[in-house]
Length: 135
Image (cartoon, rainbow, N blue to C red; front, side, top):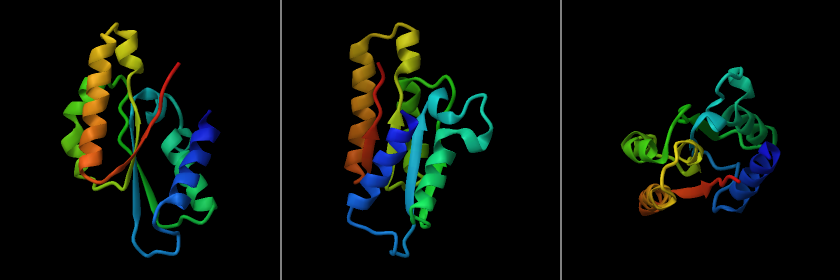
């Protein structure tokens, strides 16, 4: 699955109105829980580091991947941390939240509301969003 997301983000970057030749840095923030934070992994094995390596390997040397994932994070925690996320001035945010809510038995309406809040705040700041789902 990780390879799919890495390839998807490479495709997304190629489809957006910029190219690797542009001098401006492209900021990608990974905003999630332990699944993306690299919990109990070596830093270079975490999803954000692998994504950064993949993007650089295909020519996106001006992309900076920032890992803002926190092990144990919930969607409510994600909403609370939005000001620090927006302070990073990202171009793209990969949102991967909700697994810990489900494990804690949080009502799905609340999970959906929190995710909508996060996505709407990002969209209102002209930030592209990649929302990762779970089964």
